[in-house]
Length: 244
Image (cartoon, rainbow, N blue to C red):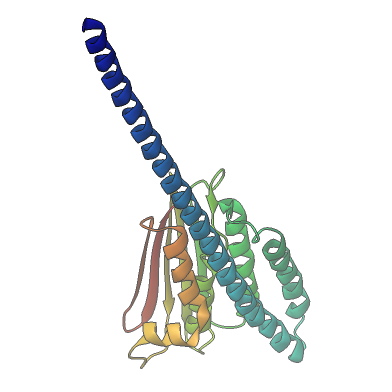
């Protein structure tokens, strides 16, 4: 009887262990399946994110190139000797966009050099006019990276709406501040008088450019950037900060 009781107790313990084993096995199999599903979802999400940001970049590049080529064409028609100089400047911009901007991230120093080249183009184009163009860069960009072509559309619009509109005593003032892991763009430019809703007008007239940059910022730097676009009676300003 004692042996029988022992057998029953061992059988009960074995059954409990077996049940616990199968329960644990089922739990881990289910957890594994959930993890696989989560990994598939994460992969698909990242692929969609990558595809969308690439699509937005391909929209921005032609927009920028078209406007610059249009400038060269206008200078060539006026037989300006600056057309050759601007063509060389444009070559460096195109090489940068073709070679570097395929990457998800580029060096911040390279992106700033790209902006310098673009601003040099605008200075050449506007050297006969009463245009005050200022660029100030503070801080060390070495060793830092940024998604490409995030800043140039804001600067392009500043020239397009603040200079090319035929404003007397036009100005574009650009300040870039690099501090630790944060980049700040503080920009102000003149605007045509009598425009009641300049921010709306600029967004509508610039087409996809600014909207795409805003979308890319939301995708690539969620909760890591702040963008403020504002205006007064005489000027239009953009303030952007990015945690690199």
